[in-house]
Amino acid sequence: MKINYELIANGSPQEKKTEMEKFFNDLLKLKFEGQVESFKKLLINLARDTDDKKYIEFCKVSMEVFISLKNVNLKNIMATRLEAQFELPEEDRMVDSVNLLKAIEEMPQKEYLLSLIESIEK
Image (cartoon, one colour):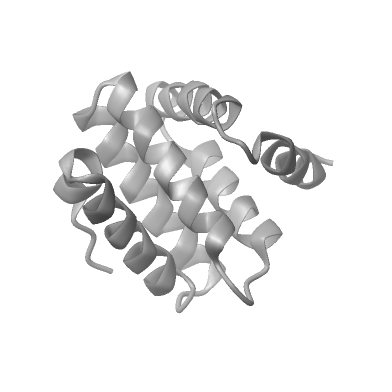
């Protein structure tokens, strides 16, 4: 799966959105293990190559695209993302965890996203 990390980190808002749409479309073609590995690669690259502001922006764009997916079990995709986060090296996991929550707090769909995460953690 080819991902343009540079566009996701530094592209225009439309470029980021387009690249994340491509990422999710490609992700859905993979089995669970491949999805987790793809998410891990994405998260590791962004955690190491961006500052918190850009990482939060990535999280917001990816959550917006995530919510817009049609005919997809969003709980399964969120579970995949959280599994990838769990498997990250400690430092990268902290960057992702903190910034994902900060991004969600700023989103209009905050309650929906938090309830989705909570339903997975049970």
